[in-house]
Image 1 (cartoon, rainbow, N blue to C red):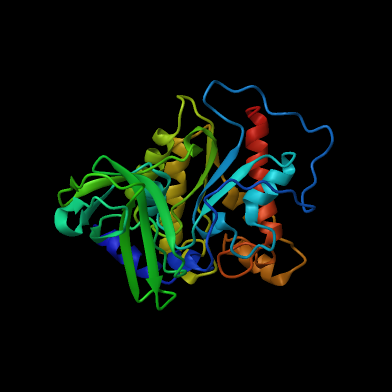
Image 2: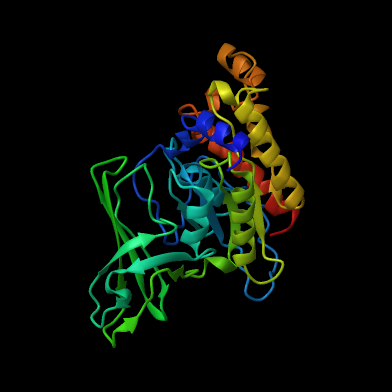
Length: 335
């Protein structure tokens, strides 16, 4: 990290990581829901036929803004599903995670691990991992036990995380358990665990990452690229959402963190011009001029308080705007 990044990281410690808020697990399974918040007109067209291997199902990839912290109805993924005739969706948001953790969790990046005894044991009991390079199941937001299916040293099983004492957790343990008993398998220190795609790599992906490590633009851009490349087939359907700023002095218009996030959003737009959605501008411009605080927020170039549940997370009205922006892109591409 260079000098500018180090300074920005310090400035952002209490602002960028504010997206960590919100406990509870996010579902890694398929969710299908309807909502009265955004009823779908009867004339809503069915999705166009897609190439073999792709799917109109929605997979929402991200942190607490994807998880829906501040929403009473499941955040923008659930609202979007309702706008699209209750289309099948999966919400893969976990609050507090960086873009790297998220990319590893969906299976787009490997994590190197060290297994106690340098071997996957013969029995299908959990073996402790003394090191994990990308703690893909961790978050400062909760102590929820999580698991991720995948492969380690040619053995299929599940990476598991347990934690206690938080949030944030004071103790955390990672283990690996194979699916079924077999022969012990040597597994050298630094071996790669790669999570399964669980079929989501063929779904229409909505990628909203980087809020928790936006000071490290190169890493965020690389992680988004990894997620996009993880999708299949070639020409897979995806959208990349802009990172939103919060009600923090450094993130107000002209602030040092604000400039850095604006530059990162510009880089994301340049990298994915046909798939980028500027949800931040849509939120900022949806302020209510009759509300004094909204007017102040608009002058700060941040989403207005009338659309937020706290300094950074949205409320259902805010998430509805995000869902509407995503729906508009999908409709423009007939996805």
